[in-house]
Length: 268
Image (cartoon, rainbow, N blue to C red; front, side):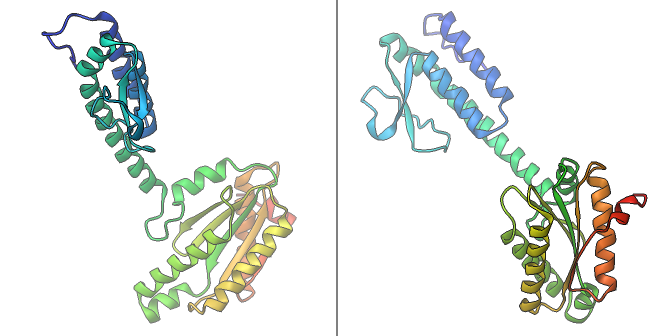
């Protein structure tokens, strides 16, 4: 990008500011980083970023907040030289910053879709695996499986099955904290990772979820297998939770089963 107007005197200092801003914009990963690069350039060119409502007559007529916070303008504060520099370089820099911000927004939307299960809005399998791999000792892994879900699909149709999955996802999301993770593990199976709570508390929360889902009368119950992450790592805890889930379903479903010590010893 060449923002130098041949009609203007050569200004190496301003050119250097513009080049730094462009390099920073090329590395930006978020809209906020693009706005920060633009605002830094405004200040280095001799201006100040001021709220639109309090801007003076010398402020340039370009809204430069990039949609973040209240509208703001660039106002020269160091004299005629700053006014000339901003008049020459601000609009091209703003155009570049807006283009970068739009690119960052697209990337973030794509990344969000990749991490999110489209049907339920919960974390998708890839994100679940990543979060689970980072689980610490004493975190609690819960595997949940809707009972008789195939029967629900067969008798009431896939639309009813999808509606049940979405509603169950809403109940799960409402029952966890922001620092906990809840995701769709696959099909009608879900995973919750509780961070820093005792296993007994996690058991009670899962029992309350089972009770709520039964009261919903959605056509299926839910079984839960639960295991605490220990020094053998989250992979062993997941396998132990899966074995506990199998016992809960084998006993008739609609229950919460906590992993036994032997569940951790079996090969993953």
